[in-house]
Image (cartoon, rainbow, N blue to C red):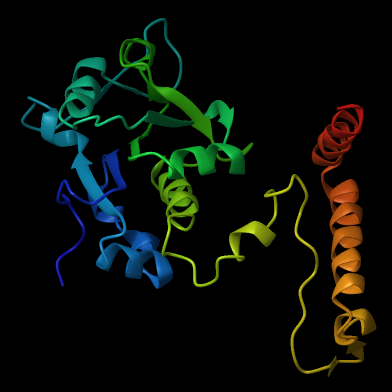
Length: 246
């Protein structure tokens, strides 16, 4: 079966990736529900090889940083040519970089409601700043850590968006119950067997009392968020206080 490359324009949500490693795609985007959704034409993937825009016979795309310093920098003329080869069609142009704004579920939902995304996968020390400014790129980070390149980050971001598209998830309630959807982390999950290695499913979950179960789930979400992500918990509390004042 041929790899996912250029898509037909009538697919409603498409992701374009600009990369030095086109063979990295579709990667995990071609598996499970995300891959099935692509086969069902719920979304599409376009992969652009940045090296195709190098005039050098060795297909070089980088040069030493101005002012000195370690590593190499992606050249602005080559990066811009690759970017300009992709039709924007209202899609935001995103550059994945550790210095970018943190990717949140709120931003993912916004991206999922649009026509798609264009993602530039950086390599080496980074991309010439003039391209970032000249092409009005949105700088995004998937976490406070550094990767060798943006391909894994691009797949993570695209997957987060695609799973929110209509028809991708099996149950309509699946997304609404997840972490971050109401500002809190998800509650613990259990399934059969009832007893496992001396550990039991909490009694309330076996009670059939939907009101008690809902309250237990909310209490657990609040407690886990307070303990693991105090920043999210404080934002959740502040939102509740503002609703009470309204």
